[in-house]
Image 1 (cartoon, rainbow, N blue to C red):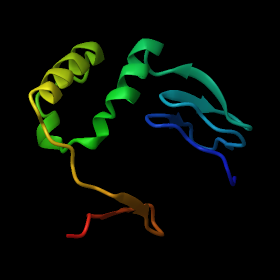
Image 2 (image 1 turned 120 degrees about the horizontal axis):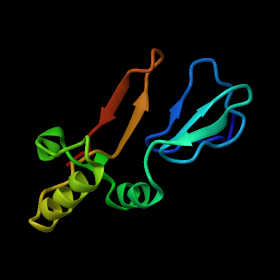
Image 3 (image 1 turned 180 degrees about the horizontal axis):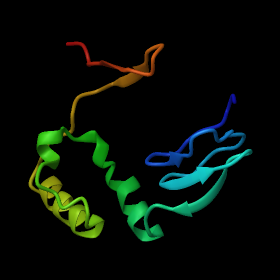
Image 4 (image 1 turned 90 degrees about the horizontal axis):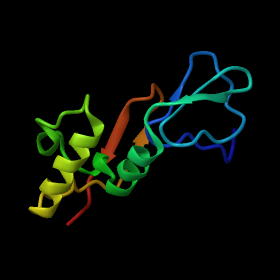
Length: 107
């Protein structure tokens, strides 16, 4: 639906009908879709949204203990403090089959 957003890291169940926005890192299902639980504790979600980990290339994220989000965030914060660079992406569009097309900055 127009104006409805699915937040970063959210999961929407198969067959769900999303009629209102789904918050970041929520798990939503049903008709209409509703939040059934959260993927992570609120403090971890807040840190993940603040750090915007998706801005970095996979090689910059390599070796992070993703199964332990708190530790992964602590290590990523250390890497950021040491100066790792964000990936230079302006925006991304989804093609007709849902495949991403990345547009790199010009010049």
